[in-house]
Image (cartoon, rainbow, N blue to C red; front, side, top):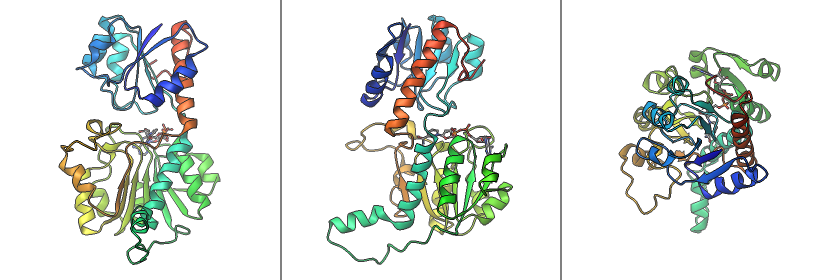
Length: 331
Ligand code: NAD
């Protein structure tokens, strides 16, 4: 089976090459381009594609893939908001994902954002390099005993809650399906309103869908504590960026940590250092000293990359054999 691997970076190629080495039935061809309506012609002549978080796999792309005989889309990520699953099902294309490649890696990154914003290590780093050892402006707070709200307690949210319990926090959670193991670990479940009212730090770990789009915006922010810390390592469109900026100006948001951004597909995963970024909302966000943005690197650990590569190859092998696969999204 010949597979076009879109959005492929050198680190993907290294781990995928290692994972596929003992599987001659699968031939991977590595492409830097993202899969989108503009690039879909590159998929012609292949049996399947493999894609990542910012590929745009809409119904036009699906129709093109089906018309050219492709039968599978192997996502190298957990989230699948960028794929038209029902169009794929109607076209007979199977969509696979990697649901649990390393919940710990994303949870630990959320904690890294919390610690950076609180203890201002992003500012201290530059000060010390310039010989400035003044502490004024670097005041933090003890995380211990603070109330941490977690929205979405699936694989990543659960790992995040356990870390925050380890810090000695009160952890309150909201999920459409509460997780029994977290209750046993001493976390509490509340409604969203209580979580907004009582949390000092709110971390988002739910998927992006119609009910969570712009979950954090002026209405929800109005219910939160002044100076709340918001962390988003999930999907950019969970946060209304313009309304978050408004709340940064008033001090409603005291700290904002983002690993994802609604318009990230125009900028993330590329070296844009010599380009003018054509996004004034994003540019403005970067000017705040109490905002830390990372470029969708929550997943980016050695363990996660190896797991993504091994699972993607396994998904393709099962597809080629016609065997059942628990990671099939549109059965
Ligand atoms: P998961 O499916 O294990 O957990 C998601 C949880 O959200 C589930 O418990 C679900 O019940 C809950 N949920 C669904 N709708 C909800 C709603 N409206 N309100 C509250 N909770 C809701 O997923 P996961 O593996 O924990 O991943 C969570 C998200 O993290 C993914 O959807 C993806 O967008 C993101 N992610 C980001 C990175 C990164 O590198 N930054 C990497 C992997 C995943």
